[in-house]
Length: 375
Picture (tube, rainbow, N blue to C red):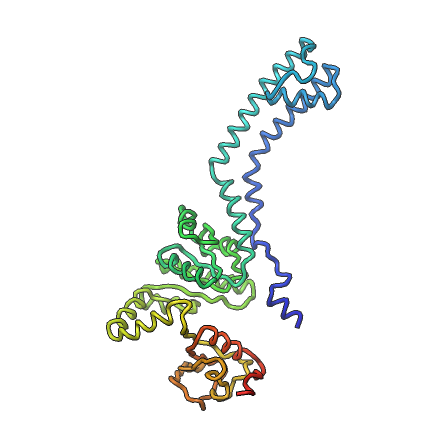
């Protein structure tokens, strides 16, 4: 029981990113070594020089060398009594300090202006935030479909990461308020690691190029086998019927055809406008008094091989079953109370959001709920 609870709340789950960007970050920081080494060398030479030439303690020599080399001040110690050789040494140290510091500042500014270091720091922060996600969706390729889907996911509080390889994708991600985003080729192994795909629930691919969708589906299924985890839920898009069938054969669980969907909606509006208005009001919108959902009956459910009337959904949760899809694809419209509920059947139910949620809770139990005994 304790193991199940730990698994449910992700107890002990490692929230570290699947990829470590520190080597790339360190590679960008390597050029900073030269300015730092030069500064340390001249400070050391200056300290030893003042310690040998003047009657200074080691700490006084270090202080004199530091503010002389950086040209930040003069006169704090006994500079008025310097010997000629010390004056020459001080002058040389000043010129060296001015040159090294000017070179260092210009060098650092050029690296920062290059943008690579800044990009890596931002990306590392984003990857660390994404690593905390669980059961999220990875949306691949940014376009008008991604923009609309992100709005729906945000409203439904579904976590998601958007990944695209466009050069200006970061600006687009900020503009459209994507909470998590990665600039990379979606089908690559690096992108899968950065998006924390190992803990994701599924993938949505919206590329208008069929070959991109094919490459992504194949890559995800291979990644899935390497992890030896449960299958990802993959949703893809395609414009033609041929591409739809091809993507399904390759492993896409659902393939959406935008042109077909639009034609179906327009046809519904033309033929049955009242029904379309009803769907628009109660099914497509959130927070409505009426909702519709299809729920799968698991193999372990107490409801398997029982009659529908034994569930008493209408009396307890105010939910009605308006259709049953059997595992073999056979559909039973408006089933009566004597309909037998088979394992892995899909129940199409209509009711309030709370009622459907309560019904799903009843269906997923192994033992018959006690509430049923009082109906």
